[in-house]
Image 1 (cartoon, helix red, strand yellow):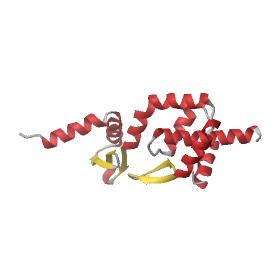
Image 2 (cartoon, one colour):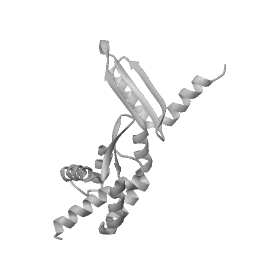
Image 3 (cartoon, one colour):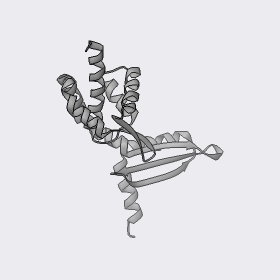
Image 4 (cartoon, one colour):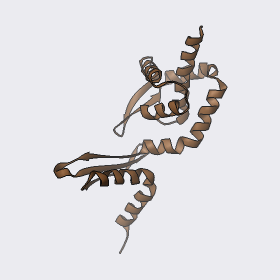
Length: 176
């Protein structure tokens, strides 16, 4: 095999390794962030490789809690098991180290969502959602008066969802 073919194969195997190592389905944006932060593959090749891995049946999209997430298929797992040794040990170490420090952030991004949409009379509807192990913990919709408030609510929710969730639950179940 020539060098470009070997590099192509290693890059695709690396993507399979990343998706498998996370142990959770991952969004295209999260996978892109991991790859670009570690300077493994440029954006355009990355998107091409993802498309080719999907076409080959090695990874698939699945809609989970209204998010399109990528996961490795059984065929992708078999290919990775057979050819994992083709990924350079340095790249594997970089990914393993990155995931050790970032896995909690990645999990939180997968389980916590916050967004807003314009509503009537220049108000905004903020949707805050928390999911754990495919179970919906909270889905809260709140109407606010301005975009600034909507952005602030989304930001606070993403910063500390556990504390906010616990506070809401405690207020609702508190005996007087």
